[in-house]
Length: 461
Image: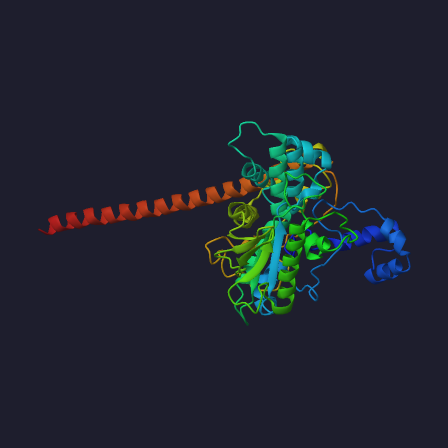
């Protein structure tokens, strides 16, 4: 798995039926009967279908793998965590590059940076499209986590770097590491092998700023061996001798893993000899597990490291799911919206419609039994809190609805909650009053009996 997994928010198409009907409507096909709709689309030229414009929310997919109960029988996270008999049949090598969200910014922004307003628009779009509950709290928490508070002035370059890190972690790195953690915990029917890498080398003639480091897709240059030939189609750059050596090493790792399920040389039990800048280096790539989290930093001088960005990833794998999961008990739906939620100028890109009626109780469509625990082996929170979210309606828009509807519904919910609380309070108060009367009557009657008993005793004596 290179720079992505089934747990990334864009990996599963969760609203493909709505987009299919949108295409059918544009091509004058009936939308009521699915079989008739499919047959009608089959009669349309492929180019006509491709020409239909779809407004897909940023970071999500209109079409792709869907949870159909057959090919994809359930939520990928549930399948990875529970149906380990299938997941554990295969060894896993997964990894990422230093910067995974480079394509979210322009070349001018790469040079000059971005201001905090642009950052806020990007992160608001990210939060609104990925989450359903406590959006404002999640947004503020993300901003706080990815702000360098040691610097009083936020330089545009620093703001760009922190925003890039936030989007890289949320969209690719955290879901990918979570996949690796699931795989490393499998022990039945056998213990599969898990390996992690982080590709860190930036080509000397890369077409982007040297400041950033290795960006998304840069590892493919070396996997396909572009430095070893004069020109390889998509990779027309010139490469240095050390980069050619690095490509040989990467191909060696990948081919060993494909053949043996182990990137190390199977004929050398304890070490691999690779060259870096013409100097031999001895290296053994250890297996990954969710406790030690060792990985190989692949560059001109490969190094063994552990716990890649542990604090930042814990933020996405532990804290954010907890904030998101805690929302199911909230009665006021407007509480879950972002501040100035329907102002289109506070977003950057296409966002999901999020009227108060869209927010419903979190549930799952899987028939699997409930999770036995919310904690993991290492004491962290079980991140299956990225549960299936049932949205009543999802219409891509740039948020043009008035907040009056939201405020009105919020007032109705608040009044209903207040009336219920008042009724319960009155009922409990009346019950306590009756109980006090009964106790008082019992004490009074007992006192009268005692007095009468003393009077009778004196009369007899």
